Length: 513
Image (cartoon, rainbow, N blue to C red; front, side, top):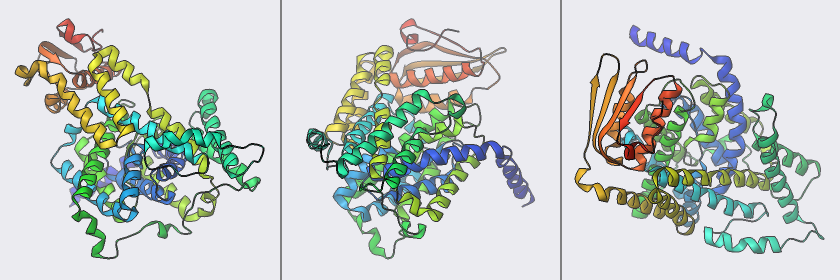
């Protein structure tokens, strides 16, 4: 027991070792998170306080147990579309039990150490999915800018866009025109601040400035525009189950499939975000299975209290790292600030115009539609990965998210067909006098990526590594992207690693010293 107490004491000492940096970073993340939590809830078709509750749980609970200490968890734009469609078809009351089941699935996946499998998902599929989600958010939130509600599908929302614009009448300015002006003001401030903000204020989020400006104008001029609806007390935002009937939706096979989809997408987005966060700092690396389990706990709790699903989120996580956070204390404190704000100042949140949050989500969604990634895929890996991205993107926008992801994953199998006789990947590790040699043999594809990632992570930090690809017969874009990121991260840390092998295999990798 004394050993346990000593260990916990060391953990507490470590947690508060960088208190001043973590405290400052937590304020920055809180300011970034507030408008995003509410905006994503509105984009999901649920009351804004549901997003705030998810942010609170993601900060305080998941932050305390996460396998990625500097990653911030909360409601994610990547799930907004699937939640919107789910709530429209099944009602908000069905979301809780389905989300609880999704959390249980994540917990089981973490316990079975399946975190590495999600890292083998094709980057073309993931980024195509995120781009499609971003496009749907922009198309849906376009209507929020006009003080109107989004329609039931991306196609219908696109079809109604011309009517919204043609319906404007600036000779008789009313709620529609005023809301649009506030939304455009928010967008303009966000874009302008990103381009022109001084270095001394680089951590001040443009989303916060845009929302504050729009809110101040709407309040000062008493404008007749729609505002967000918030509960008078934080307790009203937590809707605990009151009877066993609450679990009834889990008897429906369709809703069980929805839980699987939420668990899969949330896990993939979380672990990809965690990998991106690892590239931003030189601190503790992510423990993927632990992160998966922590997300499961968070989503289970979000289901019990009727909140939104959560993932690890890259915007808030990058803000956390850039603000100088050193430990998980920053993430925990940001959740505490959200709780305090909602508990003490609900009247202030009730003054925020819906159109201002719509503007925040338009900019957020547009950033997800990154053509830079598909250009990179085409230039580095050829037409097939770029086509996988494009098909996934188009299907997410025109049909639904799950169809787009499943078709995209099926298309990645096409890369395996020419090498079906050599799909087994052998990974040998050799300890030399001056360097470690990591030798790969066979086809380096996503099928062997879990084993390869484990070997890469075992390589010592203070010793050069020779990555020998001379016996690799083929390499898919998923493995090439993984190796490129690993090599880049090692070289950024000052390692003199080298990569050898066939020129056609090495072409997409940063092999130059």
